[in-house]
Image 1: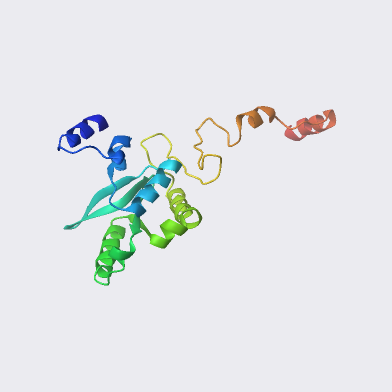
Image 2: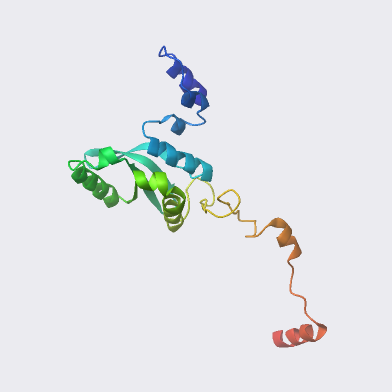
Length: 193
């Protein structure tokens, strides 16, 4: 599908950009905001499933969400607020109405400004997003169990399955029932009778 979309897009008489050539999914094609691109790169690194520029209608208004994250028991709208656009005093009431409309229909809204995204990505932005994903039961991906995201571990996250213990496989093999003496075994048998 991506190849067909790019082929049709290329038919517009201009060469494809590097972003277009290297796109793995449609979300990779959005490149309007450096802040969004930076957060998107981190979401991809942590394998956080999100939709970019998801349109949501509320009453008679339609809103484009920077990132929509669908969790098992809720939805998160992650916004990157550039200084120029969101510091405009005329924009503030519109942002407030937007947030109120979205929250009224069940969206949890997280806003990160330029400073947060550029200077506090690892210490504030990502932990805040991950904590909210966990509070809402994990990322909903249409699988049997929603995927939990963590910042710990060698790759930044670890998905546990229903049949996998919460420990390395080699550690799980070495763990067995606690060793007891014959006297303890006998006492345990007596206690069970």
